[in-house]
Length: 311
Image 1 (cartoon, rainbow, N blue to C red):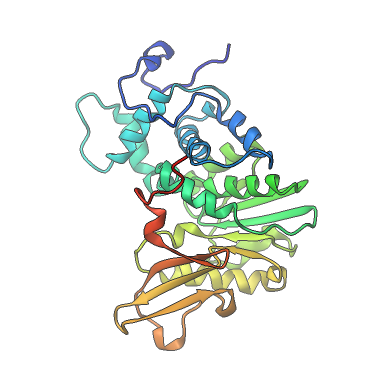
Image 2: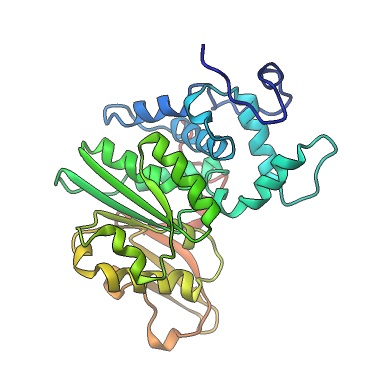
C-alpha cells in the first residue's frame, strides 16, 4: 500500500482524520496518476481535473514526495486554507514551520494555491496551437512554483509531441531549486535559477526554434507592469532568441493595458515586442485583459467566482 503523504506535524493516521475543509472536487489519486491520465488527448478536460492538478502540485511543492502518493483531500484542503491566511497572524494550533514556509513561498505559490484560478489559466493555455513538428521547446518566464511549466508539458503531450522540453526561469534560487526538483521528478520539465531580463539566460534554448513562451506571472494581476520584470524580460527574450521565435506562440498572445496618466489603453503583443510606445515611457500600465487564441479575456474572468467550468 502506498504511504500517504501528510503535513510534517501529523502522522498518517492523524492526517486521515484531519479537521479541515475537503473541497468536493478534490480526490485522493496521486498527482502522477492525474498527469498520466490528462496526458491522453482522448480524455476531456474538466474544471475538476485541472483543479486537482493545481491543488496536488501545490501540496507536493510544500511536501516533496507527495506527488507519487495518495494524499487525503482533507490534508490538501487544510493546507490550502492555511495558505489563504498565511499573511495573517497564526491561529493557536497552527504549525509554525508550515506557516512560515507558506509565507516564504507565497509569491511562487500564488497560482497553484488558487486552484480555481489555476484551472482557468490552464484551460486557456491548453487552447494554444502546437505545431506538428514532433519537437516542442517551451519557455516560461518568472515561473514561481512552475505550474505553467507543467501546463506546457501537458499541452505538448496532449498534442502527441514525442520530444518535449520545457524550461522555466525563476529569480528566487530556493524556489527554482524546489520547483525544478518537483518537475524533474514528474518528467515534466525544469525550472532554473535565472533572470528572464538577462539575455544570456536564454542560452539554454541553444538557438533552437521555440514553440511557446508563457509569462503569466508578470501579467496575471492588475498591478502595474514593472519596467525590468516585464519590459526588460521581453526585450531580453527578443534580443537573445529573435529568429528562434519566428513560429512561436505566446501565452498570453497579447495584453490590453491601461494608463491612468494618459487615460488611454493600448495593446502589447509580439508585433511590438511587448514594448510600450515612447510616449508611454515611464507611465504606469495596468493590465486589463489578455488576448488568448485571438479572443479578449478580461482579467476578472481569471479570478474566483467567474463561473468557469461548472462541470
